[in-house]
Image 1: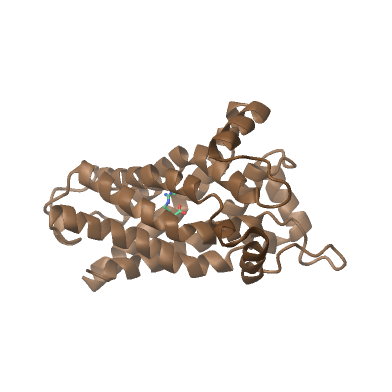
Image 2: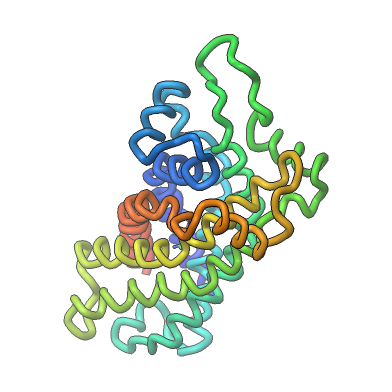
Length: 288
Ligand SMILES: CN(C)C(=N)NCCC[C@H](N)C(=O)O
């Protein structure tokens, strides 16, 4: 099993993550809290109350976890394509796989990465939703002191299964959307690259960016529900499951609730995934 794909997936994921984390914090706040009037209001309030550090809350853990998550995604994707088409990454430019194979491989990567991502994502969302200031003396102590304390507290208060709160929704979100992610990337690369050649860096950047947007636009409705289910372990339970969360969010806030964070998700997706794909292709090319 080629391990380069796993390594390249890890490093490229980490680069994309640092770039996109401030956008991600704003998105999570907009999806789960009703105190903000929009993206600008949310950004101004975070900056005033929590300083620049507020945008980077909950980032240390994803940096560690991206090693697992992104390497699983790209490694499983590429190795599934290898199993389906018997072509390696280098051979695929001359013998491109069918879009059905690309979609199936993307979905397979999506299921497995969602399973690994679930506890890390839960901790990230809980930490991002703490609005207490770290820099103002005398302000109230946040519930979680950091990622390890957060994991231990969830384990104690909500049990081991608590660490997988929202995992099904995450899997439903990621399985088809990661198929869409890789199909969009492949489609755009093929469209703008002469047959048999490798795509240029500009093509990889644009195709990666649009792959990110296409997948996040389709992922946003379940992303909102996933974030709400993850926050539901705190205090009295508001939802009896995924369907109940969808129905009661719709009843209380209308159809628009499923598109909360869509703009910020798309704005974040372009640079993050442009950098992710560019560095992924670069590492595979230089190690190849
Ligand atoms: C729609 N979904 C779930 C994705 N496209 N997932 C792939 C993750 C890529 C990158 N780390 C990111 O966070 O955008």
